[in-house]
Length: 105
Length: 413
Image: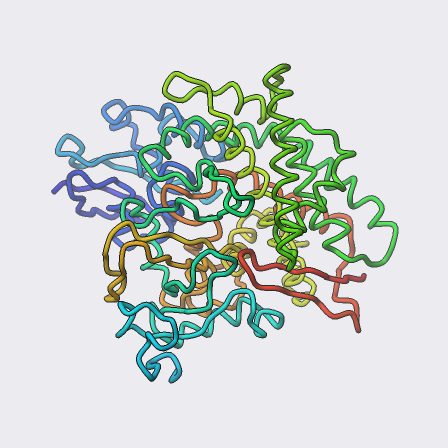
């Protein structure tokens, strides 16, 4: 079990539990944060699980590449720390990872 | 719903497979159903008063088997769509069977892991970046269609805009001359809406022949359009086979035309009958993209299906290998367990996790383009046409089927 710090669109920050092997998207949705739509359910197709990774975490997590990066192109709030949370697999190395749910496009 | 709970005498007497009992049985047909002409969405929403899963002996047609399971809840549909190893999409649409051939529509009728290979190759065709590049052309097509409409004070929406708009965008994507559009309109109408099997087969064949000719031409003279990309793509280090080329082009043809046209019909009908919401969108055009999501939820037009690859259980109901499951996406998008007042359109609704583009690995590959087309259509109409309403005395014709649609929508302003 790892923890994930999630900042919601209203600015409130929550620390949630995330099972290793799950995606950050699954952990955020299971915590009841419906504003992260994840319309496609984690298939890296819809780009509705966009999060912005905290400055001090992005080097460890890595920036988006390939399909993920191309999908993020569609978001007005795309930045270098943008990731699709369905593509962030939780592991002990990510314990304490901090992300902000990106604004609605 | 009392009639859903039991059916006597024993099911087998009605041609219902023996394993279906003790599950609920209920006649529910997407096509031959009087409620569909009144409103398909409110008709299917009534199923939420009944069981989460039931067997309908009448849901499939034209040699596609007799009867299928109907699943009415979003949670169960997510389970089915997220587990293609249990619920296969092979033969889901069945257009090749219609013309006595046997190819899969790609990537829709292919299961992972093969599906993933095709999907990764085809995803770039409709990436958000590509859609952004296409947008000026999408706006130009919308404006060209609106030009003559704006000179009058009313129109039949589907003929004037709803059907030609997505077809013209498809032709732009495929690099086809716009003067061929009338032929495409006829083929599409015949294939997807004709009640005559002969006409449907003829259209299916004509489209196949056209796409075959197109593929041959692009093999000889590749350009930068979708068809050229398909004929030059490689899988396992080889070019696509003829069947794979046809299957892919066919999917792009049927996938992006009727769905967008039908959705626009419902959206424009809704705004015609809800002037306060139409005015709100006029006053808040920046909210159009979010409004499109809510409209996609309220009017999720597609019904898909999956076939069980093994004996399994869905929502406590035992299903057998080979059983088909009908997935009417509006049932999930209108599930009251997911959304408060699901039949209300609420542009301020949060967390609109709809099924308008399906769910899971087969999530609509064209979703980014579809959304853009819908938003552009609304934006250009709201900017150029005054408050529209239904023309008095002109009945609105609606239909059920595999894609819920509006056949005729007379508007005036």
